[in-house]
Image (cartoon, rainbow, N blue to C red; front, side, top):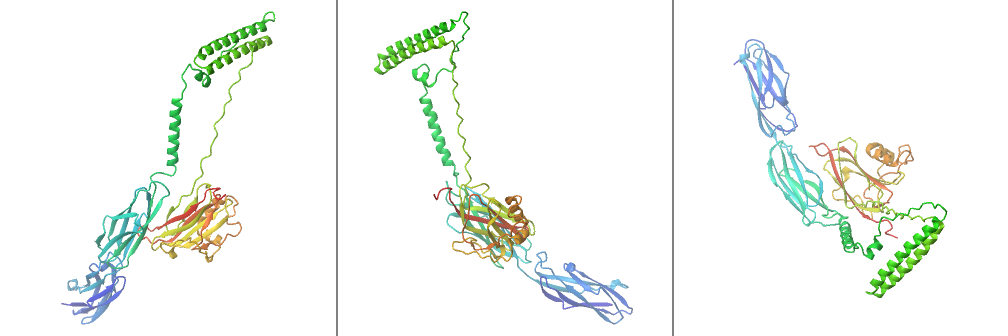
Length: 528
């Protein structure tokens, strides 16, 4: 054979992402000068190369080239043995081609990531969550799931608890969180829990979540039920005491709606007024006598009604005299119209802050941050004190959390700031007895310039020319956690924001954070 070629070393061991060089030797045993070209063949060809790509070899001489192997660190190239070859092709006598073969043993690496979605739900009976696990290594890995609750009040169930995952695959398991007891009324209850993802190789991956349980009966339902019962009793009582038509009681509480009209004509000789007076007096007298007679008959049944009959008779006589006087005057007195009274108007109730109060944020790195607030949306019925604040941060997220309290003029009266990467799970940013440190190192104006969404929200609350605008007086330096409890007055508002810089979730590329606010509400005037 005129062409001889071999690889040295023929077997190579490599870690994914590293590089190795193998020497290719080519000998020309023909009687002519031959030109040779080289090409790597096999499944390693796309991440291998030969330098130089061709050589000229004299008869009886040997030349060399270098084969560079660069396996990438990805799940697309699995761990294990990968054979390859180098096609050595003579230009003048291609039938004398040679293909030396070698083997690359790629060592395994393990990379497992997991995500819980959503991180919190709010309902009366429970919520459903999804745990997504990705095997980004180049070797199979067994993964186990376990769900743990911080209290005995929450039941957790997994649809699947273990699986052997191939490289580059994704596995999803459903988590069902249900409170043990039904909450009939009162404030919502928060049940924190953790889903632990344990790969066969690598560290555990804890995923934090919170299940909020709403009461079956809203806070206003008891008052509405009492009001409905009282209204029903009033309707029934009104039907039972409704007067019967034709009785004296019916005439007193429900007089006839039509009033007889009296028509007067001008007298021909000036004595019409006297005639009208006599007619009016006679009519009133007859009505009085009729009333007296009726009262006398009823008086046989009781002495009290006789008194009523006598009074009716006296009223008749008085009516006769008054009617005569009116007729003598030549005119009739007008009938006064009943006065109408408008029902009083009531203002709608002011909102009451509910604790614990959840909030969630999701944003892309470098984009404008999410802003929660202003909260409460309207003036509250009294002040409230924030006694605790927990921040759930997705593993690997980096950025900044801000909380500001503004007065009616837009002035910042309290400012709390915390980097996401420095958060400890389950540790409250607001703690009794803590002393907040103003060690952020930047002025308030510089912080707002780095968070355009928060700056825009503050300026909108401040209004035109507000104190929080960039051209106004210098803003205070934010306080770092842990901070002591603080009070928000009825005319103040609170804003929360998260500015994402780096997302730890490789699947969605977004930052996911959840906030829970704990506090106490004091009704206006309760302390007086």
